[in-house]
Length: 84
Image (cartoon, rainbow, N blue to C red):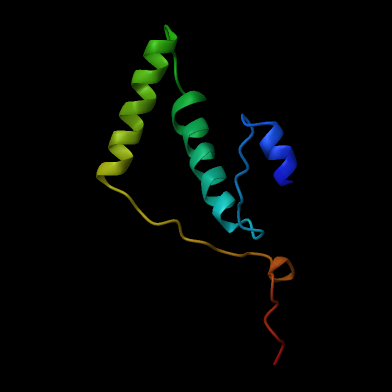
């Protein structure tokens, strides 16, 4: 790996956690943007799209709310709850 990185100085490795819960949060955020801004929007230009996205982000940041994680399907839990 060291030899490869030495030979290819423009390559950067980014190590991420093996568990993907952090990625779920990113997917949730992009889903909100898609649903609330892009799918419902009419944009006259890229600049208009950019302006509306930034307004959405500013409004969201003024009143942030934590994501409430919920599992509806116990079989999909990483560690199933033992039956009593």
